[in-house]
Image 1 (cartoon, rainbow, N blue to C red):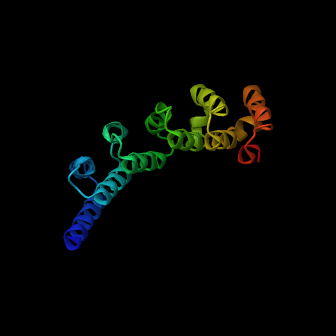
Image 2: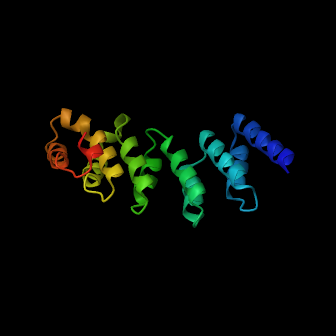
Amino acid sequence: TLETQELQEKAIFSLSQSRSDENSRFLLAQAKNRRLDPELRKSALFWAGQSGAPVRDLGEIYDTAGDDTELRNQVIFVLSQRKNDTAAIDKLLADKDNVFCQASAATLLRQGPMLERSDVQRALIAATEHGFPLVREKAAASLEPLVDAHHPDAIRALIQLLSDPDRSVRV
């Protein structure tokens, strides 16, 4: 019932406000519970992420979500909130088939010290050749600091994008 769902939502939120390993495990368990309402699962996942749940556990939810696109997208969102968290970025980069993972990763990689990593630089440069314009667009934006630092491979990649067929990538 709606009343029960509202109580469950309040309980999830309340637990999220008191950070502990036990609460984090409970929130993750709720996110994994396929018998719960999908919105409650997404809420539990969000608050687990905000409470500092380990990326490995969040990634496990992503990997086992199957065709539950909404839950997978929620994991992507939660991981994308982890600025400067190398494990979160590595997880986002790992799913080569999910355009939203790749675009989120490209956006995150611009922030903080991540751009100093050579593997991150290579991933962003490679993303400028991705089949989806959204990924190319985000990769191009993330390469701007490297271009400003006169990074030759980043400059070459952005020059190539000047003739991209998609306007959002060229701008």
